Image (cartoon, rainbow, N blue to C red; front, top):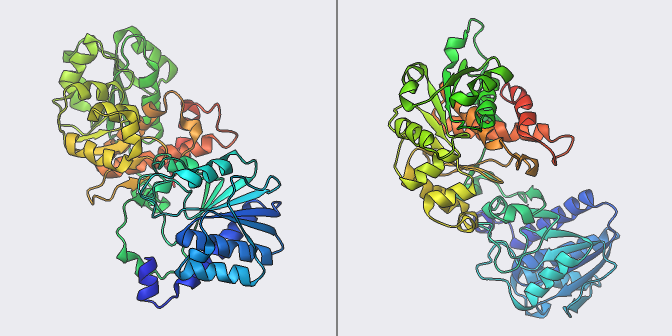
Length: 476
């Protein structure tokens, strides 16, 4: 896109660099208005050029600015050299990196290495990154935190931990994947005035789920509707001593608008489920054969919450595996699937990174190092639609460009959240949305409800808090 803007539209590269510096200055001043002593740490290439522009413009804005360079600025070429020359022409002084940062700086600008990084950060660059992380000042990264791979979010040896990242021209997948989403802090995007028709020059690697998608799929209901119009969800799980998961999934399905919700669970606690939520129809299932009459009435299946891995669970697994109904699999259903892998086009699987690793026979860290690749491998191996949960959940798509959910928060890392998501997606399936739409809308609705639940604080948010917000989200 950068190249198209320069070569096809005639926008000078230095003009884009100047716009980037100005955008970074605006974002940093807005985020940290009291920071009036900045130190800009410049490395090589155009990322260093952006840093020199920031330093020049910040000085013009009345900020006390110092610059340290890990690469001799006299060796820079192209637009980066021009940026340094303009900074020097206005009296700017550059100090060589000597292993330490300004103790009195209230803001550090990371202009070391940009989005083209392909090898581990090492040597003095790694030392400078670690010094930024250890400094008490806020850190602003230009385009992407140094050390974060722009495609995967993987840390390349060492990475800067930014409080704010200002990224330019196009959003980088690595800012939403792996450790990149943790290290980028608050994210601000500026397109730098690059015309929209320059964007087809670069293929998208993911699509963010928008409010428009929710409005299109969650339309107002006809006034004459009745509960039979909105499907019947059957939730199968809840092994002995584990009634909570099916209870949460069941209420989530009701709150997402399923017409009817039945729960098939271990006989020892069938009464507990209906006793705490009378709108659920709870059935004690001692053996798999007892599922038959429930399956005849079901529109969609949610399988796995609280299932366990007992003989009882394995009997249910054998029966559900043969079904031709739309279904959502989670939790121990996925662990059992990992033992006997099989494809099923009618199925939505919703693994977290640990479950994804078991399904692929890989380490959890390998999944997190390249989440898009793991998502693709899961779909190829198991078929259907795959939801790879975690920060910035990914959902497979028929168009091969996966969906990306950027809603949600760390407060959702608590027990029962996955059970709620299973119920939400199953309810959407029952109401007639296709597998992909159910997964995409379900993931986004779940995440947005989590954000509403965390308004008074992320720490301590529980799954029931999220359920209480679902009705607001599914009526856009």
